[in-house]
Image 1 (cartoon, rainbow, N blue to C red):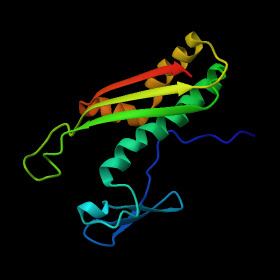
Image 2 (cartoon, one colour):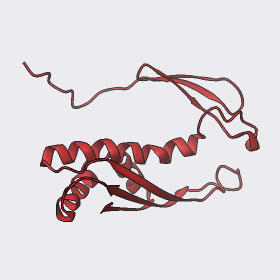
Image 3 (cartoon, rainbow, N blue to C red):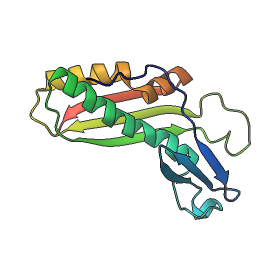
Length: 151
């Protein structure tokens, strides 16, 4: 008998501010550290909050991209990623409120599998429809460009 997946759920996390810059977070049975680099007064024991946010786009694109490829029967192989983020830091510097702190993200996805370019573009379109992190950025007003190519 197949397990029926829940369509809606509440996810619970807990965290502790270990210092002015470091947060220790428990999520999905893992202990995660989010911290600032030493040059900004942190200990550098984990990525910064903002780096954590934009890094999530790579992780999500990888997971959803592979799910979509499997669903479509497309052999994409392994994915590699290069990303650039345009970050308006006036908000984190307390200079002024910024509505869209990540003004643009350019993500290049490269697949090393035997699929055709047309098949890869089908995977890209499906991934765009289902990746929650890319939707989050798009709805927030970030100019998000994701390009898929064969390597």
